[in-house]
Image (cartoon, rainbow, N blue to C red; front, top):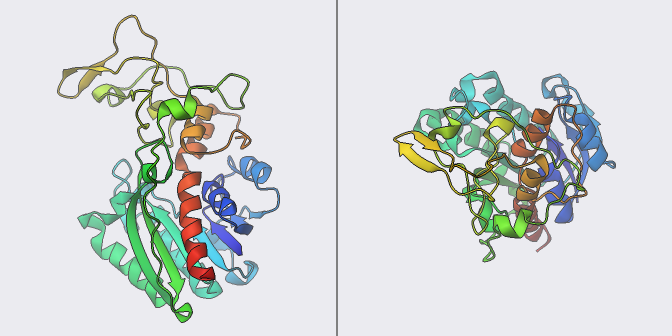
Length: 309
């Protein structure tokens, strides 16, 4: 089945859906620091580089599905918390505009758990009502990527819609028993792999406010879209709490941030997926903003099951 992709980033969700049997024929991404990475890894997809606000619906091809994650910073606990009042929050309505015009068989939208907070209740309820009003039976779930073979604790809200005339309900995939650890995922990373470099420099007081080290036998902390806030490599012991919001490193040990490739492994990108950037911070940003490939794959399988059953 052919799909179109909005707010595509480097294409983590696209890759997961490809692994589930879908084919992204058209994608849209406005951030120029991402274009080369997307085109390198999705050579058969047409990438439209304009702002979605400048693209008329007639310029977008027909497809069986629509996927994408409208920018989430304005809904995030770590972001502005302005929600729909922020320009980035309003981009959710661009997603709805395209959905209403193209009427694919299904849609999948991804966002941060912050969108469920009380302060955003009215705005998010309005978004859900508009999605339903486009002619879809809408399902919603907060999912932990670690339940779907992703080696990190990562909570995300997934919204799935099946076109009402199809007359079928969507069921979210059941958690997978296997929970990969950092040891399973990054122990064999070597310098021969692409993007295996890490950001150096100091650590902010915010970073030092809590432990940032997970052990080899644990899943990673959430991979964020910032090199400065990348988790630390598990070869060092866990940080020691010295005050309410202050931790310190154990003397005699080297603490370093995870590399871009290690973060990509944790986001379940294959090593064949190469990130193109001039500034390493753009590498971390692309990886951290992506939907984990394995999570997208399992959602794709569930969608495919509904539509082909």
